[in-house]
Image 1 (cartoon, rainbow, N blue to C red):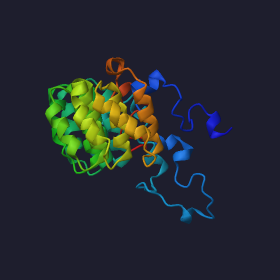
Image 2 (image 1 turned 60 degrees about the vertical axis):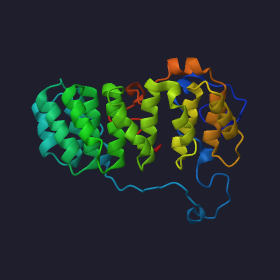
Image 3 (image 1 turned 180 degrees about the vertical axis):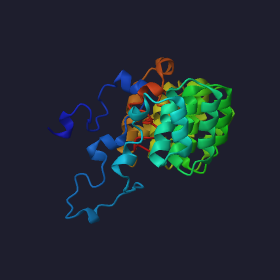
Length: 294
């Protein structure tokens, strides 16, 4: 089967009709498209001749570490056992416990333990999973903890904190979320824009127009996608420019074409975006932060 035969991985076609579900949920990850892969369609003698423009890290995690997001081993354990694992376990046990506690009944010991883990654990993934769990538990103490964790040194923890603040109360925390627009990491900037659009809508036009020139193609892609919900001549003009720009990456151009085909009012009403937890596939596998799309 060729790429063009695969409905989940179409080649770029500006006339392809927009899928309403795709419009509502957001742009697809460019990494699922083989034609967007480094070295695609190039005649290379070896891997060392392929130039990779993305930041790529070859991981060395063990099989056990890779299974840390599987909370099944803790499903039938008591809250006390999960708290012990979070505070005294090894790296994998702490990660798994943080995720598992998201399904516990909200109580002060649980929330306080997650806040402490989110602020002080040596492992960034434990901190990230902890703030994710706080977002699912909710409550005032979770919000206070998430606000503190939002200043973490690790960008993925900060990005997850934006997801949590959005989930807990995006309107109440809009000012803190807005700070993320100027973060030095693209995941945080993107998450902040998505959250703010969800309650400000067309008032985000200027910000989104600015983000269409962001250094990160993922930020540009999402800004372009969100402009579909802005009924403004400037937005339409910019989308037309992007769609016709041969120097722009294909996934951003395709997103611009789809945005131009979208009814802005309907888009705003239907938009849920990637901060909606219903798009998660596995515990801890947030589509914004856990999958290698950022």
